[in-house]
Image (cartoon, rainbow, N blue to C red; front, side, top):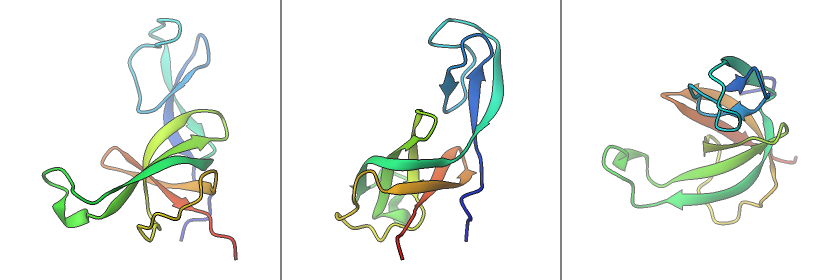
Length: 115
């Protein structure tokens, strides 16, 4: 199980400091091409989500699954899959989440459960 200490890989503009996920080749904020790899804390909260019950081709074996938008502590919002979601409609918005891994270009997060 992940500890929440993992960092999320993103791109960062060296000129204006904006973060981007997925990585880009030029900054949408200032136009600079000076983009470097950066890492963010991987801690955030669930901003919104949807449950995919009728998947696109190639994802049939994964349905149902949850796709979420996670707002990271640093302010960047990233699309993600939830690793430990029971695929229910009762997830609470703004619940803490942490980055687990990036697999096949997809960010995977776990919802932090209160025990």
